[in-house]
Image (cartoon, rainbow, N blue to C red; front, side, top):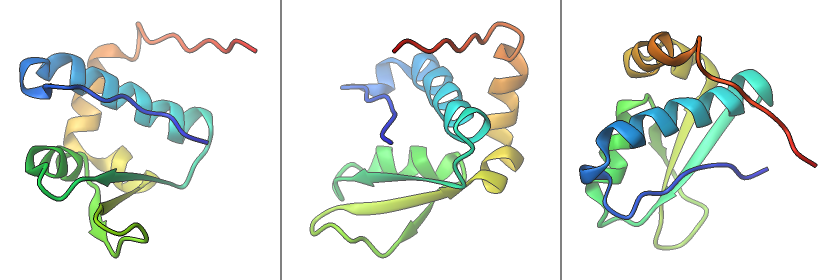
Length: 100
């Protein structure tokens, strides 16, 4: 399954990027019970790489030529300070609905 959010200029949308990231990770790990999430990033997008690492992701060997692969384990995410801080603020207001 693929889920995620992309921002054209995340520096101008820092709060939205953080909220969207936390909610997306919550859906992946708590709702879909994924063990890992991965992100592919263009190597020149240093801020995107740093942003992923700030949530606990690690760079691993990429299976896609010309892309940096970052991998985040569920336990690492749940222990991450950024994830914990954002989820503490939004968990009471977070509602996940499914449409088919």
